[in-house]
Image (cartoon, rainbow, N blue to C red; front, side, top):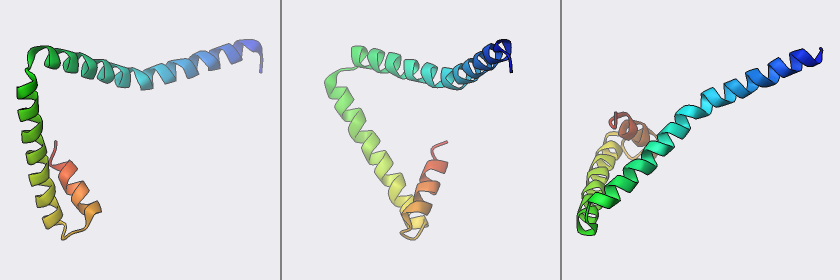
Amino acid sequence: MGKGNTAINVQQLENNILTSINPLVKDYINTVLFNYSYHEKVSEKQEAKTAAALKNYRTKFWNQALLEAKGDKNKAFKIYTQNLK
């Protein structure tokens, strides 16, 4: 294998890596931007109310999933995450 092939393989590897991490980086950036905007525009009181409401919502649906799965946490997790979509 010559040096030219190595350069092509390295470039292909680099392209494969960039292709796989780009969506993750974009998602991370979007999350950071959302959090920044949210914290700039929403009062601490409203943030606390929203967090409490979200916790109640998640608890309710987790308990429903756990009941449906007859106490099996692995099955409940699948049910719970399936319903998030």
